[in-house]
Amino acid sequence: MDAKLLEILVCPVCKGPLVFDKAAQELICKADRLAFPVRDGIPVMLEDEARSLAAEEE
Image 1 (spheres, rainbow, N blue to C red):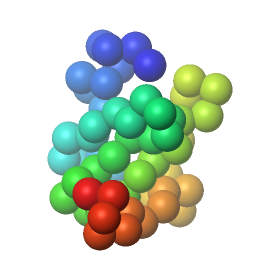
Image 2: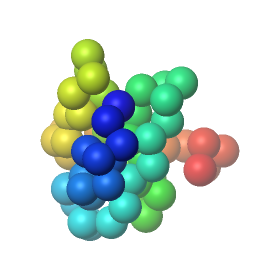
Image 3: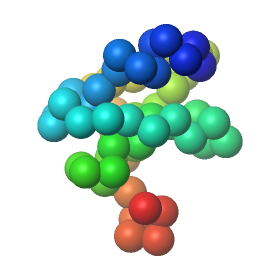
């Protein structure tokens, strides 16, 4: 994922920072405990497409 894109992307729910999990191909919002998928290099920033993080994933 492009580093410049990561700098400007924020969580669509809380507008907080996101962390890229390269292995899982997800953008993680720690504040909302949501993981947004990255499909074919394109982040899917829809709340309906995000999965909730389990407590041990945080």
